[in-house]
Amino acid sequence: MKITDVRVEHYRWPKEKPIANGKHIYTHNDLNLLIIDTDNGISGYGCSWAIEFAESMGKAIIGEDPLNHERLWTKTYVPKFIGRRGTSAKTVSAIDMALWDIKAKLAGMPLYRLLGGYRENIPAYIAGGYYAKDKGLKELQEEMELYMSWGIHAVKMKVGGLSMKEDALRVKAVRQVIGDNMTLMLDANCAYRFFEAIEFAKMVEEFHPYWFEEPVDADDYDGYRKVAAKTVIPIAAGENEVTRFGFRDLINTQAISILNPDAASLGGITEFMKVAGYADANGIVMSPHGQQQVHVHLDCAVPNVNFAEFYPPQYDSKIYEAFKNPIVFHKDGTVSPSQEPGIGLDINRSVLAPYRIK
Image (tube, rainbow, N blue to C red; front, side, top):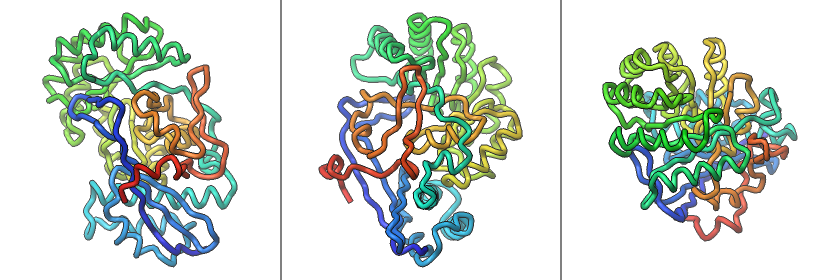
């Protein structure tokens, strides 16, 4: 089997209502696909936040056997020419995903089974609690009550977008409505400096958050150590980390209790599996970040993932129509990948056609 073409498709559509986290406002949804075609008719799909290097990297793998994912990873990830992070690593991630999609389709298996098949479903947490216009404490509590009605047992909310006192009141309001038995995660999206994160952590410790995600800048390893030393709340991080080497250094800070790797950024499935093994050897659990179509397969493939991140339909209803084989949400608050062969990124072009921009 040989690779015959590497191409991209970009889709963009407006959110029904803009939302914000501690640092950014989101007005649109983007789906950036990288597609690898082969001479036997199988096409593999990958995705990432940015795939601007697809044309140049694609030329390097035309004619190669798509099953040789290790060879092609090292052939595309060349820091001397493309840099070590950012767009280049994201493009490598999308290429690697597409290669694994081809492999799984050729094997006639869903990706999670090809990678190990540790479980069939996994508990999900709702990635909600965003800031939005005219959204006060009452609306925030109503949002959480809705999630509870779905059978969910864990929720995440954003912090860092308001004053510490205001955000502490938001955390209190959520804990009041979900009760003591629900798992509550906090996500600052790198909004604080280390001394601010320490102060805020002390303000909300009484509400027993399960984790405090990205309290400081992603590259501030010393800041992570300082925060972890001053709070009993476990620190989570990793969605902005790249390659197994970056995760090695992050883990070696001994400040991180939960990793949030993102296969669409760190280097694809190939690197994710290496990160998962290293984390497991260090006694660290994971809850991957981002594209749930892909990550639900990874969540179910390895033993040291404890939660799947699940984005509620009200934040992006179109995404549930976009894929042919969407993630399956169960009444007990767990999620499962589709049983169809592949990684789950084959799209419904009729649904997305009006939103294609490239």
